[in-house]
Length: 227
Image (tube, rainbow, N blue to C red):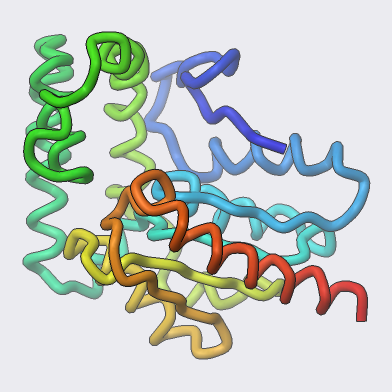
């Protein structure tokens, strides 16, 4: 069951009456998961990974496990460091917001896509793909609020009752690499998995690596549920 967060698919954009939070997005996930009729496994990448972890607090015994690939809980870096990793992502967020305020979506898209996927990624895209991204890039302005402004304390995430698996790529960006390490080192009962290549966009760039690992984790969580 795939969930469209605010501003994607047929889900309406964020209202902008107040800053968006992870809890707002997690409410969408919890509502969709309730339709399953049985405990579910939440899987998310990037913002989706952060939302999946937040949704885990809402779901109680409806949750079988969580798999988060590089959840972008950037607020943790502000509190726990490394400082240079937070400065790096804060700079990206600030520049994106400036472009967004001026409605310069091509400039915003190039900076954003090239940061996560490598230099030249935007320019190598087809015009059709760029057009699709221009439509959803305004959502990112609100999403920065949800992941950079203060959120749950690092220790609070350990209260998720179900098994949690955090995934990252060895060659990812410094901020997301650090967040995965912070979470796993703080919550020793969580599992940290690393794929050797693909960067932050490894679920798209290297599905051969990510899906193989993901399949093993899913089998483990499903087996644990049956026993």
